[in-house]
Length: 251
Ligand SMILES: NC(=O)c1ccc[n+]([C@@H]2O[C@H](COP(=O)([O-])OP(=O)(O)OC[C@H]3O[C@@H](n4cnc5c(N)ncnc54)[C@H](OP(=O)(O)O)[C@@H]3O)[C@@H](O)[C@H]2O)c1
Image (cartoon, rainbow, N blue to C red; front, side, top):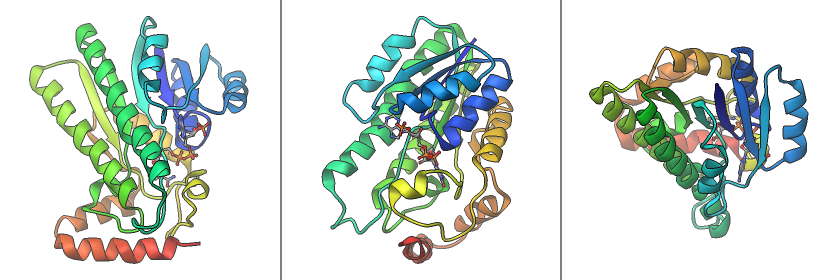
């Protein structure tokens, strides 16, 4: 049985790939950095397939699906993603569009195609990586990133409900971590305002909860409290608080 992990070359995706390998799955590792993927392949105990792909390119997700669709895949982890920091009027439009293609469009395509396939087979798990950002009303200074992660959360929860109501043996979970110590900050050009948790713990927690068929997975206590509290505070105030947090992230 196979698990497909996008963004498997570092951070949360890498640790999820290792965790699923430990559980006996063959892993399809997808990302751009082929050198890193080949090294990771050597570390895994089960069979691993390496696919070099830039999922911010148009049609890349369709190509990825075509490459793997004949394999017996039971788990898809849509993890590849990144953020862009800065005032909306100053951030680079083309970079932002690439981010949206990766964070939203590719994830959407893979979720759709695998949800269809899994429904036909009546078996499968989809784990979509959003963020605690996706649980907030908006995130000034990381505006497009927050919006993209809200899309991931909303899509995943809607699809999960459709599948549950049909009695399908197919489950969609959405992972919503707060800060995790990965390459994320470097790529987004920020520093964390609060301490991050380890990608290994995030992956172990996420996989356990995915198999428990949990819809929303938040892997740290303080982020679970924050997400809960934000529901009882007026949106306008939550957005102001988020803005304050984001300002502290500026390097
Ligand atoms: N770290 C955090 O604090 C945090 C918090 C909440 C949510 N998240 C989410 O967690 C996910 C994983 O991020 P991370 O924190 O583990 O960061 P990371 O260490 O930077 O890992 C990102 C992964 O995505 C891959 N990737 C980036 N652009 C890609 C592209 N165009 N095509 C294919 N793969 C691409 C990267 O591989 P290549 O560079 O080899 O392509 C890498 O494997 C993201 O969706 C992120 O939004 C992170």
